Every structure is written in structure tokens, then in C-alpha cells.
Image (cartoon, rainbow, N blue to C red; front, side, top):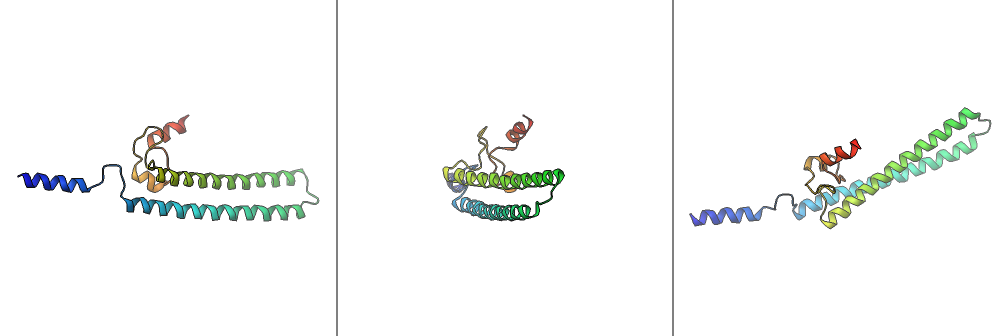
Length: 140
């Protein structure tokens, strides 16, 4: 009987503790976050290039614009800048997720300290809050 108990203890000790990741899982997460970061940076660079090109076109096409045309162009420019800022915010979120991964805090809620469900991290890898804390934040 003692052997059976020792065997179970040994098998259990090989499994990582609940909420911890193996080195392979951590590297898989790191690779996915790094790939997403590259995608976002490329998207941001493309967006900036498009904004610059549109600005050039608007400068040459603005002769004879009335107030409505000027207002429309201003609104469109603000939307484009808002889009670029949104991409930059996502870049910051992914960079923060990589920092948390290095520090050992990735996958844990910054507010309550509970583990963030794997499903949430799969859907939103840069999540810093568990579902409950995120819902509370959104209600404020």
C-alpha cells in the first residue's frame, strides 16, 4: 500500500500547480503575443502611411471647399487619427502582456489576484482583468 501512495504522490508532483504554466506553454504564449505585436505594429505603420497620403491628397484637393467640405474632411481626419490611436493602445496592451509574462503576473487579475480563465486569455491574450473585475470596471 505504501508504494501506491508514493506512486500517486510522485505522479501528482510532476503536474504543475494549479494556475501555473509549463515553460513550453509560456513560450507558446510569448510567441503568440509577439506575433500579435508584430501584426499591430505593421497595421499601425500602414495606417500612418494612409493618413499621410490622404493628408497630401486633401491639401491639393481643398481649393474651392465650402464649410461643409472642410467639416467633412476634418471629421474624417479625426476618425483616422482615432483609429491609429486605437491601434497604438492595443500595441501597448500586448507590450504590457509580454512584460507581465516576464514578471510572472500574466494570467492573473491585476485587481483581485484570481486567475484569468484560459478561455478569456485565448479570446483576449492581453487581458489584465478577470471577467468579474472587467464587468465591474465597465459598469463604472
